[in-house]
Image (cartoon, rainbow, N blue to C red; front, side):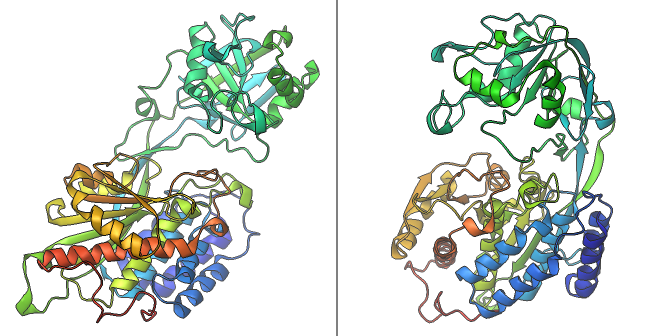
Length: 562
């Protein structure tokens, strides 16, 4: 961990440990400070500046307002949080910020003993960096300029190197990189992705890549033709800039080895890696090969057979780590109890509505903003929505208890929400509805997608009515609960679920998913639709007719700021 980030984290924890609970503060500090971060990032501006700006915006604006939503996203997606990867200090700062906001709003800790954190263990398994390297001629490279692909077996393959273009055989597109070359008992070198057409789109699939671009498709094609190993490099013509060559770092809820984790996808006796453009260009320079000219030639119709690498030997080695590493992990959760007077307590007073979003993202592979996966839309936007819904409902009467939770490790396989359900933090049978916010800040030209499980289908009309009154175009899809976000573990536990999503975009899972690209005015309308849905659930609980906010309560636009 950098000294500046360690000091920041310790100072913030010390200042508010009494507010969040001693156990919670110690848990965050221990997990974060024990984690090593990238060296050399101390020169970046302190996080306190962006944190202070966020708090000032929160003090001046009303709940659900665009300014407050933007304040949350600006902080959570800032470079200071280094992409919020599980087990690293950036995500600990995010979790502390979320818990601090929950405490300020007045939410009750989900665990009286442990504070605002639901703690559990994850297990990290990885390829062994000491055993992972590539040699081409006299040039040798190891991590971080080479990474094993998830389908690689362990071992070493040493053989002559042969260039195989993009490594694609696509008869439906009259393209076959292997038509004039023999790769039996060779190491094949291929470009990542696939050839481009007009406006740099895929020649095969237009604005999206086809299955021919997948690592697995390229590897299977090479292996089926007798190759011993595959080296992949990103072509410089259409993909310039920093390269993320981190190893897999797979996380799981059980202590599986990386060998076991990828058993189904692993290709036995076949080694597959990706190397950096810089290394490969240096290794091939003595043979007169320039990667840019080579890629341009391929796309102009040149055969890979025209590239002569006779006598160039390559050795590719990959090793597995032996034991998984334990990684402390934390969801952040709190609740607002039902407010019905004691004489009016009903069965619904002890039931729950859960509003959630994941706070993790993909981390970073360097210190520059271009090397950090900021995760503004994915999913600082959803976390901002959760926090603002909590602030909005804190001063309103509630016939049910409301739980607000942000999950870790969604990107690694819904691990945080799976652990939340697995550990019985709330009995699933006591949850009337789970609402999940995942990527709610982009694509203003497209309808907002509300996915409803069969059990939540009754809420479709309420969502459509609330959206219509706000001039918000929505697409309500009933009977849809796919395993793509944190609503799914609740759905598997027979909880009715609603998931809100504004769609994919070019910045998805890139370093350019930044806070300035979000539409905060539209986010306000999206979150207010969710607020009205929650109120309608309350009305249904009391068997009261009607479908709008109680006019005696503060209006969304004039709600007093907390």
